[in-house]
Image (cartoon, rainbow, N blue to C red; front, side, top):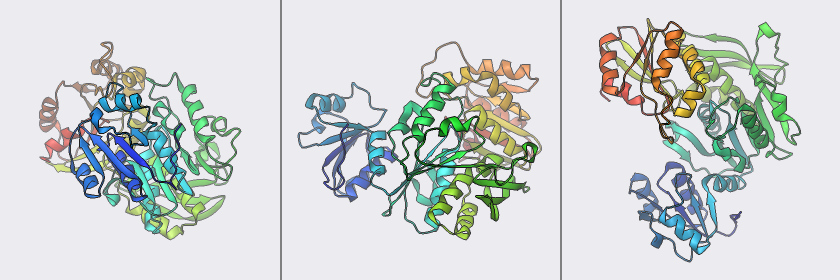
Length: 467
């Protein structure tokens, strides 16, 4: 694999430079003195900014964009092998790096590179950690999977030794990363269009943990089933975190970072007593809902304490965070109906969101769910029905295909049947217009309406609100 020498800036070209993440890293390398160019299908505000910085931008991905002075090419997973530039790069035998490989090498340029992994909660935890570091004026470089208002997007270029990023397991992307510290939030069966089964997924997380250096640290959720298998034979220090549960006689000494005496206010916002390595630290209050976010906050606090950030700074940053876009995001109210949007697209996430919503003020809880990918829907059909049954009323949209083609053997009608078996009232519509009309006629003053899924279901709530 080609190795970027950050001491000797070279000529680097990005295929697909217009994406938020790719553009951010292109700008980062430009600031280090690299001669950067790139192409994308369309001009945008992002590419206009790159051009204003002196980065050469090509509209359209043509073979002529590839010149002999290019030392290395970076491309995204969205670039197919029949792409003109991709073909020309291979013809010229120019070294290539995919986006994950490039990020992994960038991480080596930071003394404190932090990677947040897990099947669920990566964006929230990365955002929490980022805000804590920013509140302490540590000037981190950040790459987060959602829009974080505090940084005006999902990329922030800092000038310190701190780098914070999400680490996605899909296609084993995170096995290209080189963190100094890492978090494993949870390990569930997901992305089964790539992984064979849960054991294959667990093995990948173990391999990810093994990438940590001897002087590194792994913060892992101690509630993960047989988590010790994921931490076996590691060179780094392992710290566990979790929620104290008297039912199982877990105490503050069970985990290195623990939450005890959990309470929720009338808005479902959580607070808890924080314990660190067996010692009581302080009372923590969050401005985000649900028990799952209490769990997500713990490893962020753990890393912050290890870095030496004062508790008061941590508390202030945590309470200032009111969620990333599409994470239990309050969209507005119409006719006394509160509309929330959430990115949940796995049964575990759906359960967490609807459980949190139970503590939110409402008469009836409506969930408008758009299944995400045929593979995931088919694999978790029963679990989806069980999680969605937590809502009073369920409205289903068609499956959002994303990267997949319709196999013809699974649809939202199958989910309707599973919910009917559970005795749930469920409504299924093919188009968003019909969903919106139905909701306008049936949601009542005081109800809570959650649009849910990783596709474009968010537009239903926004249309109702006239956004």
